[in-house]
Length: 137
Image 1: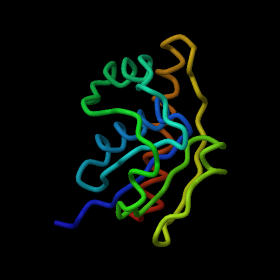
Image 2: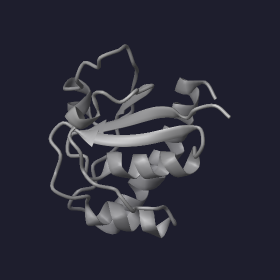
Image 3: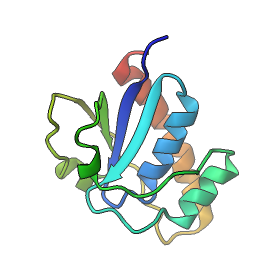
Image 4: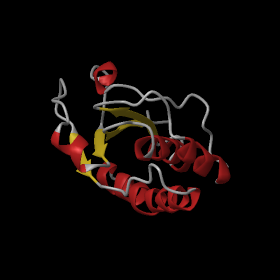
């Protein structure tokens, strides 16, 4: 059994897109990746729409909470995925070289649940295969 690759999903607020991406990657690529998420300016809590969208798909939301990127800088990260342009521009320098991928998604904050569901499905459709390709499995 090989050790799962660690994927860090980075966004500004770490309250919506990156949280959904973390849950989706941990579910869809279970055993292959360990997904974490963080933000450059984390919000106080995960967006209710993001949690509802994940739960509607039967995805686990336990333990999801916004984190600042600084708390994860010492983690052995194999891939950093920025899901918003602001996070891409302010992505920190990691202690060791790390592969980076930028894959922006629409921010549904303040929009109806349908938009969160669309973003959730877009993340699943585009991010999962992109992570597989970047990590070569």
